[in-house]
Amino acid sequence: MQESVISIKNLSIAYSIREGWVKSVENVSIEFPKGKNTAVIGESGCGKSTIANSIIGILAYNSKISAESQIIFDGKNVLKASKEEQRNFRWKKASMVFQAAQNALNPTVKIGEQLADSMIDHGVSNKSEISKKIEELLNLVKLDATRVLNSYPHELSGGQRQRVIIAMSMVLDPELIILDEPTTALDMITQTYIFDILLDIHKKRNLSMILITHDLTAAVKLADKIVVMYGGKVMESGSTEEMFDNPQHPYTEGLLGAMPFIDGTVVKKKSIPGSPPDLVNRPKGCIFNSRCYLVEDRCKTEEPLLRDIGDRQIACHFRGE
Ligand SMILES: Nc1ncnc2c1ncn2[C@@H]1O[C@H](COP(=O)(O)OP(=O)(O)OP(=O)(O)O)[C@@H](O)[C@H]1O
Ligand code: SF4
Ligand SMILES: [Mg+2]
Image (cartoon, rainbow, N blue to C red; front, side, top):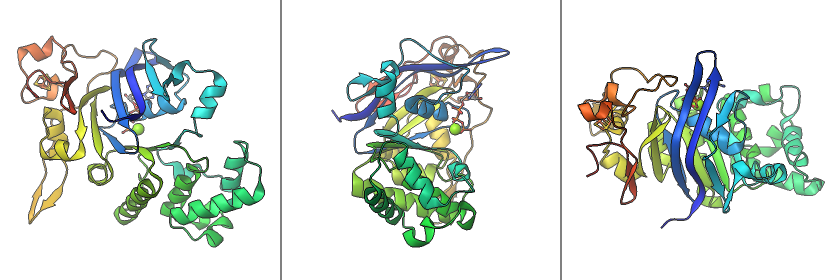
Protein backbone atom coordinates (compact mmCIF):
# COMPACT_ATOMS: atom_id res chain seq x y z
CA MET A 1 0.00 0.00 0.00
CA GLN A 2 1.14 3.53 -0.82
CA GLU A 3 2.67 5.42 2.13
CA SER A 4 0.77 8.56 3.17
CA VAL A 5 2.26 11.95 3.92
CA ILE A 6 -0.81 12.73 5.97
CA SER A 7 -3.91 10.74 6.92
CA ILE A 8 -7.19 12.26 7.95
CA LYS A 9 -9.40 9.93 9.96
CA ASN A 10 -13.03 10.47 11.00
CA LEU A 11 -12.69 14.23 10.77
CA SER A 12 -15.85 16.16 11.67
CA ILE A 13 -15.95 19.94 11.94
CA ALA A 14 -18.90 22.21 12.69
CA TYR A 15 -19.25 25.98 12.96
CA SER A 16 -21.53 27.64 15.46
CA ILE A 17 -23.99 30.14 13.96
CA ARG A 18 -27.25 31.69 15.26
CA GLU A 19 -29.38 28.95 13.65
CA GLY A 20 -27.31 26.10 15.18
CA TRP A 21 -24.25 24.17 13.97
CA VAL A 22 -23.13 24.20 10.33
CA LYS A 23 -21.85 20.63 9.97
CA SER A 24 -19.30 21.46 7.32
CA VAL A 25 -17.16 18.31 7.42
CA GLU A 26 -18.75 15.02 8.47
CA ASN A 27 -16.71 11.97 9.31
CA VAL A 28 -14.17 12.42 6.53
CA SER A 29 -11.22 10.05 6.07
CA ILE A 30 -8.63 10.72 3.36
CA GLU A 31 -5.16 9.32 2.69
CA PHE A 32 -2.80 11.75 0.96
CA PRO A 33 -0.05 9.72 -0.72
CA LYS A 34 3.55 10.70 -0.01
CA GLY A 35 5.40 12.41 -2.86
CA LYS A 36 2.21 12.70 -4.90
CA ASN A 37 -0.27 15.44 -5.68
CA THR A 38 -3.84 15.05 -4.50
CA ALA A 39 -6.63 17.31 -5.71
CA VAL A 40 -9.68 17.90 -3.54
CA ILE A 41 -12.57 19.03 -5.69
CA GLY A 42 -16.25 19.82 -5.21
CA GLU A 43 -18.72 22.69 -5.35
CA SER A 44 -18.40 25.85 -3.30
CA GLY A 45 -19.20 25.25 0.37
CA CYS A 46 -18.51 21.48 0.37
CA GLY A 47 -15.84 21.85 3.07
CA LYS A 48 -12.55 21.96 1.13
CA SER A 49 -11.04 24.99 2.88
CA THR A 50 -12.33 23.78 6.23
CA ILE A 51 -10.30 20.58 5.82
CA ALA A 52 -7.20 22.52 4.69
CA ASN A 53 -7.49 24.96 7.58
CA SER A 54 -7.86 22.12 10.08
CA ILE A 55 -4.63 20.51 8.82
CA ILE A 56 -2.73 23.74 9.23
CA GLY A 57 -4.49 24.65 12.51
CA ILE A 58 -6.17 27.89 11.53
CA LEU A 59 -9.87 27.11 11.83
CA ALA A 60 -12.19 30.00 12.70
CA TYR A 61 -12.89 30.71 16.39
CA ASN A 62 -16.50 29.46 16.09
CA SER A 63 -15.45 25.99 14.93
CA LYS A 64 -15.52 22.71 16.81
CA ILE A 65 -13.62 19.52 15.88
CA SER A 66 -15.15 16.26 17.10
CA ALA A 67 -13.23 14.20 19.66
CA GLU A 68 -12.80 11.20 17.29
CA SER A 69 -11.10 13.33 14.61
CA GLN A 70 -7.47 12.54 13.76
CA ILE A 71 -4.93 14.15 11.46
CA ILE A 72 -1.95 11.82 11.44
CA PHE A 73 1.49 13.04 10.39
CA ASP A 74 4.67 11.10 11.17
CA GLY A 75 2.60 8.67 13.24
CA LYS A 76 1.22 11.43 15.50
CA ASN A 77 -2.21 13.02 15.71
CA VAL A 78 -1.41 16.71 15.20
CA LEU A 79 -4.78 17.65 16.71
CA LYS A 80 -3.57 16.25 20.05
CA ALA A 81 0.07 17.38 19.79
CA SER A 82 1.65 19.92 22.16
CA LYS A 83 1.77 23.58 21.10
CA GLU A 84 5.49 23.24 20.29
CA GLU A 85 4.92 20.12 18.16
CA GLN A 86 2.06 21.83 16.36
CA ARG A 87 4.22 24.86 15.60
CA ASN A 88 6.95 22.60 14.27
CA PHE A 89 4.47 20.74 12.07
CA ARG A 90 2.70 23.77 10.74
CA TRP A 91 4.86 25.64 8.24
CA LYS A 92 8.02 23.59 8.82
CA LYS A 93 6.48 20.26 7.78
CA ALA A 94 3.32 21.47 6.07
CA SER A 95 2.65 24.91 4.66
CA MET A 96 -0.27 26.51 2.91
CA VAL A 97 -0.99 28.92 0.08
CA PHE A 98 -4.33 30.51 0.88
CA GLN A 99 -7.29 31.40 -1.30
CA ALA A 100 -6.50 34.86 -2.85
CA ALA A 101 -3.20 34.93 -0.94
CA GLN A 102 -1.55 37.32 -3.38
CA ASN A 103 -3.52 40.13 -1.75
CA ALA A 104 -2.11 39.27 1.68
CA LEU A 105 1.41 40.60 1.00
CA ASN A 106 2.23 43.71 3.00
CA PRO A 107 1.99 46.61 0.49
CA THR A 108 4.55 48.73 2.37
CA VAL A 109 7.39 46.19 2.59
CA LYS A 110 9.66 45.07 -0.27
CA ILE A 111 9.29 41.43 -1.37
CA GLY A 112 12.86 40.51 -0.37
CA GLU A 113 12.27 41.76 3.16
CA GLN A 114 8.95 39.91 3.46
CA LEU A 115 10.54 36.64 2.34
CA ALA A 116 13.45 37.14 4.75
CA ASP A 117 11.05 37.95 7.61
CA SER A 118 9.14 34.72 7.03
CA MET A 119 12.41 32.80 7.58
CA ILE A 120 13.56 34.91 10.55
CA ASP A 121 10.13 34.38 12.21
CA HIS A 122 10.88 30.67 12.16
CA GLY A 123 14.33 30.92 13.68
CA VAL A 124 16.62 31.17 10.62
CA SER A 125 19.15 33.90 11.39
CA ASN A 126 22.11 33.35 9.06
CA LYS A 127 21.95 36.22 6.53
CA SER A 128 23.79 34.49 3.69
CA GLU A 129 21.67 31.35 4.18
CA ILE A 130 18.55 33.52 3.94
CA SER A 131 19.72 35.33 0.76
CA LYS A 132 20.76 32.10 -0.93
CA LYS A 133 17.47 30.41 -0.11
CA ILE A 134 15.35 33.33 -1.30
CA GLU A 135 17.19 33.55 -4.60
CA GLU A 136 16.87 29.80 -5.13
CA LEU A 137 13.12 29.89 -4.43
CA LEU A 138 12.45 32.89 -6.66
CA ASN A 139 14.29 31.11 -9.46
CA LEU A 140 12.22 28.01 -8.79
CA VAL A 141 8.99 29.98 -9.34
CA LYS A 142 10.61 31.52 -12.45
CA LEU A 143 10.87 35.08 -11.14
CA ASP A 144 13.79 37.42 -11.78
CA ALA A 145 15.22 37.52 -8.24
CA THR A 146 17.18 40.78 -8.66
CA ARG A 147 14.12 42.70 -9.77
CA VAL A 148 11.55 41.07 -7.50
CA LEU A 149 13.55 41.32 -4.26
CA ASN A 150 13.59 45.12 -4.50
CA SER A 151 9.98 45.50 -5.62
CA TYR A 152 6.92 46.38 -3.60
CA PRO A 153 3.90 44.09 -4.13
CA HIS A 154 2.04 46.69 -6.25
CA GLU A 155 4.95 46.69 -8.71
CA LEU A 156 4.25 43.04 -9.56
CA SER A 157 1.35 41.49 -11.48
CA GLY A 158 -1.19 39.27 -9.68
CA GLY A 159 0.47 36.17 -11.14
CA GLN A 160 3.93 37.30 -10.02
CA ARG A 161 2.62 38.04 -6.52
CA GLN A 162 1.10 34.58 -6.36
CA ARG A 163 4.44 33.07 -7.37
CA VAL A 164 6.07 35.04 -4.51
CA ILE A 165 3.50 33.49 -2.16
CA ILE A 166 4.31 30.01 -3.50
CA ALA A 167 8.02 30.72 -2.93
CA MET A 168 7.17 31.92 0.60
CA SER A 169 5.36 28.65 1.34
CA MET A 170 8.64 26.81 0.69
CA VAL A 171 11.10 28.83 2.79
CA LEU A 172 11.24 26.14 5.47
CA ASP A 173 11.39 23.21 3.03
CA PRO A 174 8.06 21.63 3.99
CA GLU A 175 7.23 18.07 2.97
CA LEU A 176 3.68 19.04 2.14
CA ILE A 177 2.19 22.16 0.57
CA ILE A 178 -1.53 22.78 0.64
CA LEU A 179 -2.72 25.07 -2.13
CA ASP A 180 -6.22 26.42 -1.60
CA GLU A 181 -7.47 27.75 -4.95
CA PRO A 182 -3.98 29.07 -5.75
CA THR A 183 -4.97 30.71 -9.03
CA THR A 184 -8.33 32.31 -8.19
CA ALA A 185 -8.74 35.71 -9.85
CA LEU A 186 -5.91 35.15 -12.33
CA ASP A 187 -6.43 34.93 -16.08
CA MET A 188 -6.38 31.55 -17.84
CA ILE A 189 -2.89 31.90 -19.31
CA THR A 190 -1.39 32.89 -15.95
CA GLN A 191 -3.26 30.04 -14.24
CA THR A 192 -1.81 27.54 -16.71
CA TYR A 193 1.66 29.00 -16.24
CA ILE A 194 1.41 28.71 -12.43
CA PHE A 195 0.19 25.11 -12.65
CA ASP A 196 3.15 24.30 -14.91
CA ILE A 197 5.48 25.85 -12.31
CA LEU A 198 3.83 23.81 -9.52
CA LEU A 199 4.24 20.63 -11.52
CA ASP A 200 7.89 21.49 -12.09
CA ILE A 201 8.43 22.17 -8.35
CA HIS A 202 6.72 18.90 -7.47
CA LYS A 203 9.06 16.97 -9.79
CA LYS A 204 12.24 18.76 -8.73
CA ARG A 205 11.60 18.57 -4.99
CA ASN A 206 9.54 15.40 -4.70
CA LEU A 207 7.04 17.38 -2.62
CA SER A 208 3.58 16.21 -1.71
CA MET A 209 0.87 18.68 -2.64
CA ILE A 210 -2.79 19.02 -1.80
CA LEU A 211 -4.52 21.11 -4.43
CA ILE A 212 -7.93 22.46 -3.54
CA THR A 213 -9.64 23.67 -6.64
CA HIS A 214 -12.77 24.25 -8.69
CA ASP A 215 -10.56 24.03 -11.75
CA LEU A 216 -11.04 20.47 -12.93
CA THR A 217 -8.62 20.91 -15.81
CA ALA A 218 -5.90 21.87 -13.30
CA ALA A 219 -6.81 18.92 -11.06
CA VAL A 220 -6.49 16.50 -13.96
CA LYS A 221 -3.21 18.06 -15.08
CA LEU A 222 -1.55 18.31 -11.66
CA ALA A 223 -2.92 15.54 -9.49
CA ASP A 224 -2.14 11.85 -9.19
CA LYS A 225 -5.21 11.32 -7.01
CA ILE A 226 -8.59 13.07 -6.94
CA VAL A 227 -10.91 13.30 -3.94
CA VAL A 228 -14.46 14.42 -4.72
CA MET A 229 -16.37 16.08 -1.88
CA TYR A 230 -20.02 16.99 -1.55
CA GLY A 231 -21.82 18.45 1.47
CA GLY A 232 -18.85 17.89 3.78
CA LYS A 233 -18.37 14.25 2.81
CA VAL A 234 -16.13 12.31 0.46
CA MET A 235 -18.22 10.91 -2.39
CA GLU A 236 -15.44 9.22 -4.32
CA SER A 237 -11.67 9.09 -4.56
CA GLY A 238 -9.16 7.35 -6.77
CA SER A 239 -6.34 7.81 -9.24
CA THR A 240 -6.87 10.75 -11.58
CA GLU A 241 -6.80 8.51 -14.61
CA GLU A 242 -9.44 6.12 -13.30
CA MET A 243 -11.66 8.87 -11.96
CA PHE A 244 -11.58 10.68 -15.25
CA ASP A 245 -11.96 7.64 -17.50
CA ASN A 246 -14.53 5.87 -15.40
CA PRO A 247 -16.31 8.10 -12.85
CA GLN A 248 -18.56 5.89 -10.73
CA HIS A 249 -20.38 8.13 -8.29
CA PRO A 250 -23.31 10.04 -9.87
CA TYR A 251 -21.91 13.29 -8.42
CA THR A 252 -18.45 12.68 -9.92
CA GLU A 253 -20.13 11.89 -13.24
CA GLY A 254 -21.95 15.22 -13.10
CA LEU A 255 -18.89 17.14 -11.93
CA LEU A 256 -16.58 15.76 -14.61
CA GLY A 257 -19.41 16.05 -17.13
CA ALA A 258 -19.67 19.74 -16.25
CA MET A 259 -16.05 20.14 -17.27
CA PRO A 260 -15.72 21.70 -20.72
CA PHE A 261 -13.13 19.79 -22.67
CA ILE A 262 -12.18 19.41 -26.24
CA ASP A 263 -12.23 15.91 -27.62
CA GLY A 264 -11.33 16.30 -31.28
CA THR A 265 -13.91 18.89 -32.30
CA VAL A 266 -16.48 17.99 -29.64
CA VAL A 267 -17.04 20.16 -26.57
CA LYS A 268 -18.93 18.33 -23.83
CA LYS A 269 -20.72 20.23 -21.10
CA LYS A 270 -23.39 19.07 -18.63
CA SER A 271 -24.45 20.49 -15.32
CA ILE A 272 -25.82 19.12 -12.05
CA PRO A 273 -29.39 20.33 -11.40
CA GLY A 274 -30.39 21.64 -7.95
CA SER A 275 -28.39 23.33 -5.22
CA PRO A 276 -26.06 22.26 -2.38
CA PRO A 277 -27.61 20.73 0.78
CA ASP A 278 -28.52 22.50 4.02
CA LEU A 279 -25.55 21.81 6.32
CA VAL A 280 -27.37 22.86 9.50
CA ASN A 281 -30.27 20.43 9.05
CA ARG A 282 -28.44 17.82 7.03
CA PRO A 283 -30.81 15.61 5.00
CA LYS A 284 -31.27 11.97 6.02
CA GLY A 285 -29.75 9.19 3.96
CA CYS A 286 -27.40 10.06 1.12
CA ILE A 287 -26.41 13.73 1.25
CA PHE A 288 -26.63 13.88 -2.58
CA ASN A 289 -30.13 12.35 -2.82
CA SER A 290 -32.04 15.51 -3.82
CA ARG A 291 -29.88 15.95 -6.94
CA CYS A 292 -29.14 12.39 -7.95
CA TYR A 293 -30.61 10.89 -11.13
CA LEU A 294 -30.27 7.37 -9.68
CA VAL A 295 -32.06 8.11 -6.39
CA GLU A 296 -34.26 5.36 -4.88
CA ASP A 297 -36.22 5.17 -1.59
CA ARG A 298 -33.28 3.59 0.23
CA CYS A 299 -31.14 6.67 -0.51
CA LYS A 300 -33.54 8.85 1.51
CA THR A 301 -33.17 6.87 4.73
CA GLU A 302 -29.88 4.99 4.64
CA GLU A 303 -26.56 6.77 4.33
CA PRO A 304 -24.12 5.01 1.96
CA LEU A 305 -20.77 4.26 3.59
CA LEU A 306 -17.53 5.11 1.83
CA ARG A 307 -16.40 1.69 0.64
CA ASP A 308 -12.96 0.63 -0.57
CA ILE A 309 -13.07 -0.89 -4.03
CA GLY A 310 -9.48 -1.68 -4.91
CA ASP A 311 -7.67 1.67 -4.84
CA ARG A 312 -10.97 3.45 -5.29
CA GLN A 313 -13.41 4.64 -2.62
CA ILE A 314 -17.07 5.23 -3.38
CA ALA A 315 -20.04 6.28 -1.23
CA CYS A 316 -23.10 5.14 -3.17
CA HIS A 317 -25.56 2.27 -2.61
CA PHE A 318 -25.64 1.35 -6.28
CA ARG A 319 -22.23 2.09 -7.66
CA GLY A 320 -18.86 0.39 -7.36
CA GLU A 321 -20.25 -3.16 -7.05
N1 LIG B 1 -16.44 30.56 10.23
C1 LIG B 1 -17.54 30.01 9.72
N2 LIG B 1 -18.73 30.14 10.36
C2 LIG B 1 -19.85 29.53 9.88
N3 LIG B 1 -19.88 28.78 8.77
C3 LIG B 1 -18.72 28.62 8.11
C4 LIG B 1 -17.49 29.22 8.53
N4 LIG B 1 -16.52 28.88 7.66
C5 LIG B 1 -17.10 28.10 6.72
N5 LIG B 1 -18.42 27.93 6.98
C6 LIG B 1 -19.39 27.11 6.23
O1 LIG B 1 -18.86 25.80 6.13
C7 LIG B 1 -19.12 25.26 4.85
C8 LIG B 1 -17.83 24.83 4.20
O2 LIG B 1 -17.06 26.00 3.95
P1 LIG B 1 -15.65 25.95 3.21
O3 LIG B 1 -15.11 27.31 3.21
O4 LIG B 1 -14.85 24.87 3.83
O5 LIG B 1 -16.09 25.49 1.74
P2 LIG B 1 -15.21 25.40 0.40
O6 LIG B 1 -15.48 24.04 -0.15
O7 LIG B 1 -13.82 25.76 0.66
O8 LIG B 1 -15.93 26.47 -0.53
P3 LIG B 1 -15.28 27.43 -1.66
O9 LIG B 1 -15.06 26.52 -2.83
O10 LIG B 1 -16.34 28.44 -1.91
O11 LIG B 1 -14.02 28.03 -1.13
C9 LIG B 1 -19.91 26.32 4.08
O12 LIG B 1 -21.26 26.05 4.21
C10 LIG B 1 -19.55 27.59 4.80
O13 LIG B 1 -20.59 28.53 4.73
S1 SF4 C 1 -26.67 6.53 -2.69
FE1 SF4 C 1 -28.47 6.93 -3.95
S2 SF4 C 1 -28.70 9.17 -3.95
FE2 SF4 C 1 -26.65 8.70 -3.22
S3 SF4 C 1 -25.38 8.82 -5.01
FE3 SF4 C 1 -25.96 6.68 -4.81
S4 SF4 C 1 -27.82 6.46 -6.01
FE4 SF4 C 1 -27.48 8.62 -5.73
MG1 LIG D 1 -12.62 27.36 0.03
